[in-house]
Length: 507
Image (spheres, rainbow, N blue to C red):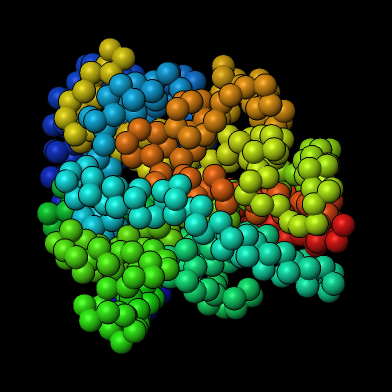
């Protein structure tokens, strides 16, 4: 550790020691006023509350605690009241019956640098600006019309993935499935937005982009001291609020360059007012909207929207496919059943899987649902915050309380699922349960007004990528399939702790 870092830590701990009496008094005062109508929960320690009970995988720890205290429980994480919900019925009360009372997000201080939380649709308060961004996203990005128009583009990018896998097959080279799918998802989204590939397969730039995304997700998933003790925000210790987020700045620089280059092109090629009549991609559509009325949609809105979408979309797609492939390799009979369904459908077609084929592949869809049940992309979704005091299920949820919906625990609840820890896609063949936010047993993309806006894109992308990988190739791992490491790395999203490396075998 360098001298500057040591001085920062020494200064921090000195200030913390000086502030200790104030933190202690604040905590005791709050504890004495603890509402007796709060949901039940474990008794915490002075000052730190229940922090020690979280462990390295909080979604596991809180699932165990919920068995003792029930599907709605309260904890103190530092001085912050946190409500944990972990059953479909309780979740429906929060995100359906009382959805408007929990529309705000609980924003980690690490994501407030550069006022990211004020401009990002994922984190901004549920006001007029959020409603405007949600409408623009729905109309200009993820409408059925827009997605249908770009169906061929997605198919083309998946073919490029298959060509890359084929090269690895010829060389008998192990492939990082998560890394390859991340590149594919990145280029699907970048072509959808900008009509360009952001990164070819195998280049270091892809890994740098992925590392930046993962770092932002980790920063948003692991609270800092000011998150746990809001009183510290007043002292701005170590410049938490002013410290520039290097990873966000790096990604924003990429989008700024793309926007500026497009503006320069439009000024020379298009009509005198710079308006594009081609509407070739999302960037053109948004720039046209910006030119019509900059107050409706600014360039800063645009760059932050792109940052939000690339963070939320790429990582969840690649991690879900990686988890699905891991489960299929561990369960060869399931892999065989899924592949047989695809081969039977495609036997009279001299082409690869298309989007219109997905509706005729119920077992493949069941595999994806089962993967999302066991390995939800965001184990707590994106934490919400109570806008005011709310009475839920006979308990009082106080204003500003953080709401964690433990969808990981819900997916493994024996009261909801038979053999919950087993990978059994067949459970979804005789049920209409889906992941679009209406069936609260399975809400990996959230529910209510703040459901993931990219759900429709994910619903098209996941099956065509996964189906193509198992249709064209068999897969083997070095060693035995049972040795595949299924441990998780906790952040906003759940990554495999050890990436899946597998050798493709051409079928």
